[in-house]
Amino acid sequence: MDDGALAELVDREAIFALVRLERYWRDSGEWEKLADAYVEDSWIRTTWFEGNGRDFTEASRVMAERGRHSKHPIAPIWARINGDRALVESNAEIQNRSVIEGVEVDTVQYCRFFSRVRRTDAGWKLVSFEGIYTKDTIVPTNPADRLPLDWDALSKLRPSYRIWAQLMALRGYEVSQEKIGDDRPDLLEAFYGHAEHWLETGENRDLGPDATGTA
Image 1: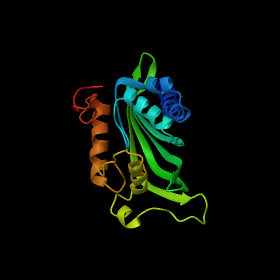
Image 2: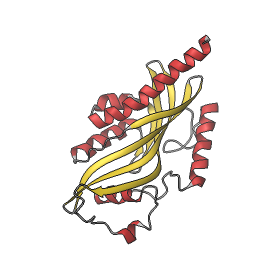
Image 3: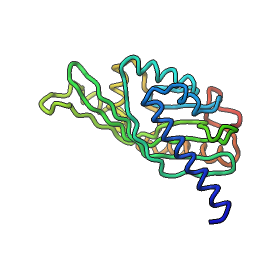
């Protein structure tokens, strides 16, 4: 293996470790480590949040204090590196146990996590973190229980994250129906196009409150 290939392998493993640890730190409530995983001008977009990494950390801490504790199994599948910038995508799940109208349920959101990452003096850091949603499921932990959900209402929502959106709404979080998902190839095409542009040029056309600048 030549030096260039070895350096790329080391970078890829460091990026994979970063995205795994970011989810672990969130799940385990290690908030300072979570905040430190992002660059200062990072941008996070999930079903329930849009903003910078430090605000996301604080919002995640508040969510945990309100009793919502999700787990995020994650398996990085590829990274593309261009100098000090890279893109990384992972297969993932968001697992949660909660109670709806007295019925204990388990929900799973199947998704992919996608990030832009940048090399800094302190190593690779996340420039962005975003979910790409595929499908979700819900089951009562007691098979004899009936799910207290209005399926007619749910069927009108996006199939990629309709159950997740409904449960987040019950907790007071507003979830847009314009999130990135496999059921919206138009959104995915634009999303990947912006990411590729950033990888090549460093120019952000779609991140942050003004969607301008470089990172």
